[in-house]
Image (cartoon, rainbow, N blue to C red; front, side, top):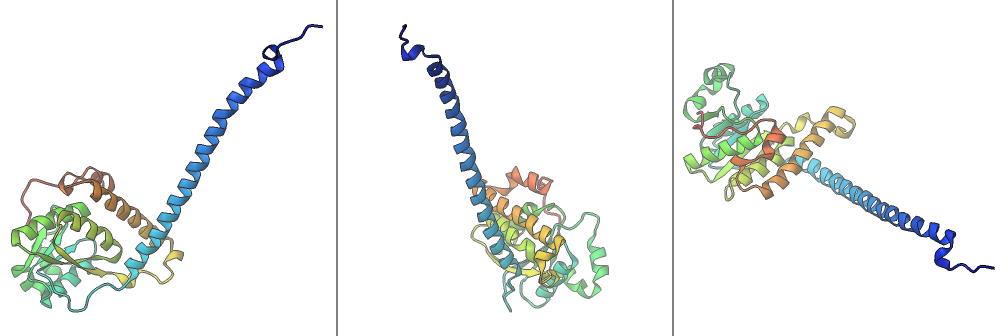
Length: 244
């Protein structure tokens, strides 16, 4: 009888490659499971963050009687502009900037739509035609504030847009005091989570808010923001003087 060494045993030789092939599969499985748990964790964090975001959006933030050096309204709805002019008329700020006005809308046309505010348009309201997105609003607001040497601002925009607006403005103007005056709280339905358009609006704005919060930690100057082009679809205009 011929004795075989274990190394020459065919069963032994075929088992070793199989075991070696199984090791990478086990490693891949561990990595996939780790990535899966990481994805679940990130989703949970984002879900909790979304809850806090909606809470802040729906919270009645406007401070009764709050005053600042100036008022800035970010365009996007007629209610925003009307509320901002009312604040100016109440003496809550010395001057008002309407940022992001459509280039086809003239000052005279705005006066014709609200003749009761003619005196304010003629004395104390500036129009910014350059800003095309929220980053652009922050850039033009910075130029305007520095030109007037204002150090505190009442910010008027929609409630859902306010968190991202404050992130961009604070990034562009560190050291300036911003007071939030959100509008449109009454347009958010009580059961917003059952209303698909409202839920979609809040979810999209939350994603933009998260991206803006991360971006402003990485970029030093909003005028050279690359991510702003991706998020806003258009590059903030720079170089020319503010169109007042």
